[in-house]
Image (cartoon, rainbow, N blue to C red; front, side, top):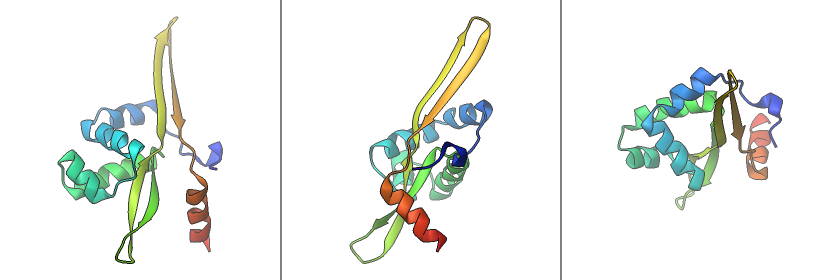
Length: 119
């Protein structure tokens, strides 16, 4: 599991800016169901792969997507992306604005992949 201390510190402005993008929202929803490659996300969203990669970089900086490796039938592998955003809540009341962001924790396979990459 990822320690809370290892998660990216992200401010409200960054999260709102990301979620203001319809393609980012579509990417997060799609990858919450199943891991998808950048090419699959490009087809899903109807935008270029370079545009998808720019968005993935911003989402990764905010720790809102994670990477996994998916083996292919030809013996090679490809990087796929999974949404880490579990819940975003913004509340305004009693003269105060508060917000909360919950991320999904990595599964054991993700942890082993990261550990192996450190060797």
